[in-house]
Amino acid sequence: MATGEGFENLTMLDILPWEDVLNKHVLPCLSIPDLFQLRQVNSQALHLVTSFFNSTFKIDLSPYCSKITPDAFRLILGENEVLNALVLSGCKNWLTDRLLVPVLIRNERLLRLNISNCLHLQSETIQAVAESCHSLTALSLKDCHWLNVPSFLMVAVSCRELEKVDLTSCWEINDECIMSLVVACQKITHLSLAKIYGITNQAIDAVAKGCPRLQYLDVQGCWRVNNSAIRNVGEYCKCLQVIKVSDCRDVTEASLARLRLRGVKVDVPAPVGLNLSRLEHTFGHGELVPPLYLQI
Image (cartoon, rainbow, N blue to C red):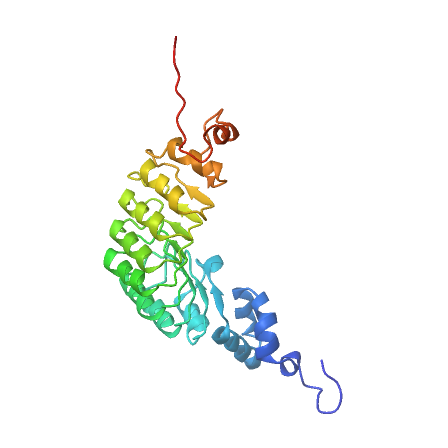
């Protein structure tokens, strides 16, 4: 509290610069519920919190997804035009196209968007992403069962800066979608296609040859993917660090062993007794040959 003549009634909100200090360094440390409590203190606090909501670069509502209301969403995001990251994962009971589309249209510089498990959204949201968010680098659509092929193709063609894409359980996605994605978006490093039952070797072959920077690939539960496609991933994706293939019934150690030798983390345990060092010494950089057992 400042003291002296003319300063008796000043508070820290009067003294500290809002944009340079409070909005950048203090308010980001507060939770959404704390910010809503602060804005109720007085009119000055109300203006401060409103200023923060309108100027913050990141909003993450996922911890409060079951408590946020449409009116609260409008208060938080109603005027913001500078967002870089928007996380709405799990906002499945109240988030609609009508609420979200205006936010996306205003924030053309958005880099990261997570709308996983938002069950009441429709293709209008994805169309807004394709039309407005051309700088997007990360897009998470996990459990968005409503996502259809035409809408995703728009995103694949329009958002060419994408690096991380999560399509887990987007059941309508097919090989055509993935092939279009990797042709248009050649910076992809992380890709999840888990539990998309229509994905085949054709899509994974396209990923292998079209994503030289790929570090993470998740194809868990993709029953139609087999060793042939995984071998191609191993051959072409030299930056690969993690691959997940559990519940891929036709993916075996015949394609995974070479990846293990390279240090790639595989979610399926290696067979008991498999000695990678011995295999590397025996076969070097050539093809791994399954052991031959002769009974005499």
